[in-house]
Amino acid sequence: MFDLLKPPILATQEFYGLAFRAIRNVFRSPHYVDDIVLQMDTIGVGSLPIVILTGFFSGAVMGLQMSRALQTYGAVGQTGQIVAITLVRELGPVLTAVVVAGRNSSGMASELGSMKVTEQIDAMRALGTDPVQKLVTPRMIATCIVLPLLTIIADFVGIFGGFLIAYFLLNLTPAQYWNNVYQSLEYNDITQGLVKPFVFAFIISLVGCFYGMRTTGGTQGVGRATTQAVVVASVWIFVATFFITRIFVSL
Amino acid sequence: METARQPVLKFENVSLRFEEQPVLDSISFEVWPGQSRILLGSAGSGKTVLLKVALGLVKPDSGSVSVFGQDLRKLGERELFDLRSRIGMVFQEGGLFDSLTIEENVAYPLVNQRVLHCPPEEVRPKVEESLSFVELEHTLDKFPSELSGGMRRRVGIARAVVTEPPLVLYDSPTAGLDPITSYTIMALILKQRDLKRTTSMIVTHRYQDGHMMANYIYNPRTGQAEPAGSNGNRAFQSTVFMVLREGRLVFEGTQDELESVRDPYVAKFVKQSEH
Image (cartoon, rainbow over all chains, first blue to last red):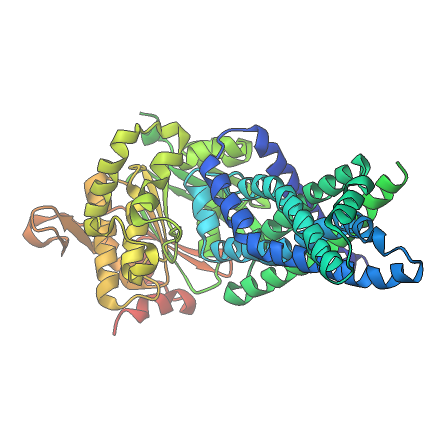
């Protein structure tokens, strides 16, 4: 029984160890600014097309789906409110994070994993750099900066997608829709919508790096690490969003 | 002369287990300045791990490791980095960073090792010197993936010795290479030993590598490795052989002693080379 529990507990301990060192390194020199900028480009600019597409279509779908339910109450005019609130509070952050996790947690796990199995991580330590400082911390900082920005873009594009549906299919006027959107959003929604991506950024980067750094067993191991990173990161995003929502709902 | 009186590297009863499997089993030995240690052993006998323990990359479960008289157990991670700047390590497949060019790879220890305080304008000349040492000065702007396996290992050597460390560890420098390339690599290791007087520790599964270390010297006039004894050259005396078997040190001694050992496992390494 205890033997079964040992590996997951050890892994959890290792994960927190890595997270602690990665965060501590934010306040310690040397800072690898070049690496942070490079990662911001890969994670942020690289994810932009897919984030825009996901955001746009999820907003449009929300518009379509909700209009049917709203018709029953004769409240099609409220489409803007529904789209805006669901996107800003929940769908924007979560979908963006899941998409970025699929793209970048896997990327980090496979990159660091290949470095691990070809002894580049060991070489790094042998040649005077802390791999956590050089590899993990820049990825974490970069994700924390770009994920909230990507979420804002996804939110906006999604609301715009909802607008196109409202305007062309539901015959709402632009003023009706945008006014409804603007009126319905409160500071609580916006805060919640920006706290979430910030937390998800830690999950995406640390889980990706964690599985990369503990890769063993050659090329096959790299594949395994990549899959695990995406699965675990995605699940934790959904778990985390539940708890954050719980906190904000009771505020 | 602090280094002359104490061993460069000292293992005392070092043991290590990976998931209940003993990898190193109370290993003790001392490497003295100017010595060449040949560590023989089959795959999985713990050779690579032993080098990583010496570098402080892997912590042993028990026993103590001292490098240049400093006990690794007493050093923090930052002090370990400073200590590692005095040890060169050549990784099995070169361990080059494939996102960096050859120039950046070789410059990496100079730029990143804080204790070295290498001024930026001296980096490039040192990198060029080190690459010309391994005769790869034309590859500066290439990436590791554009080089052959043998060339990557030569770059690995260039990177390990660019900081002129007094101790160099070689992890299977000839593994998986053809005999001619292996010979080139070994000649480079001889060159490093004889020109820079570095202490070296070479992990290998090929007895020929050890034989070459013990009986050949580098001739700076011809630029070739030559058998010691020809042209009045003296034989290189301080080559010590060690044989590792399943984490235990089963032999330590000179080449003559190694060749007279009856133990079948140890004798197998010597026989390899006789045909």
